[in-house]
Length: 383
Image 1: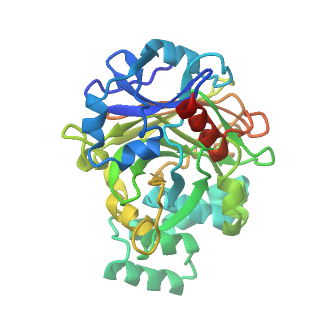
Image 2: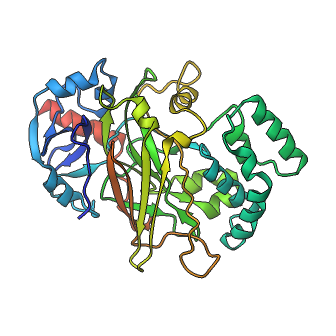
Image 3: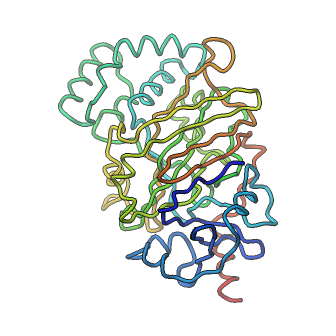
């Protein structure tokens, strides 16, 4: 059975659905899952806004909901049964943003999608051309540097410039809205593909939890489910390629930053992706966060500041190195998801996020939004 694979030294907070109550904030304490919702800290937004979130979590008394094994069992690859406590995405009111092309390998794949016009059959040919012409030129390149500007001029002369290279090696990062607040799914839920997509992939990423002051309070994992054919046809289809029902997965919990888990630990993480299909297909790969081309805190600074406020905080996907190219069918077909794939994203410092792939039209419709949360909180505080 899939598990959360949590680090026993971690200070973890998350959200759990409690039947008859609604979403509650929880802390994992050993083998126990404890409801720490207590006025005025009733949302994840409230918790991350505190001046010392870790101290608050470690000192507040709570109500034990269940043990960790029961929560895993209730949540495992289902997310459909509302009669038992189960995992939700560990964020609520926060904006859900994502960074694009922050790793060289995934940046080249974006260029390949663009050049192939979203056609997976042309991707191998284009991949060879692109790698031969520009692959080596981008290694160890610092975005926005003088060397980056020189490489840009060279690529323009060669007729190889791309909008993806602009945000990959230029001074400004690509930061976009991945999903609406309250729409992300959690550990064990289905993740959704648009039914018209024929070329798509998981994007395993580190996700930072940031409060309204721009302070990074914790980190978790995310699957930025991506439709390569849609975005490859036109970058203006980014919204349709990225934001569909159940296309943003986050979890299992937020590990809060403390003396045992710092931003340097985030930078040093190795993230592993596993895909197991009902057809017998399997894929496993890993990447190092220290290969990211922009420092995580630089990406935070480009997201929130005097130029753009987020009063409810931000969950920020940091981008992926992964764009799987392993053939799944005939040689040259490359990778695309099939319904039933089980996707796991893991790193020892945080845990493991596991979901099953389905069409977005078959995933549970998103119905519990901000208004529903406000009603739930009102019923609790007035009862």
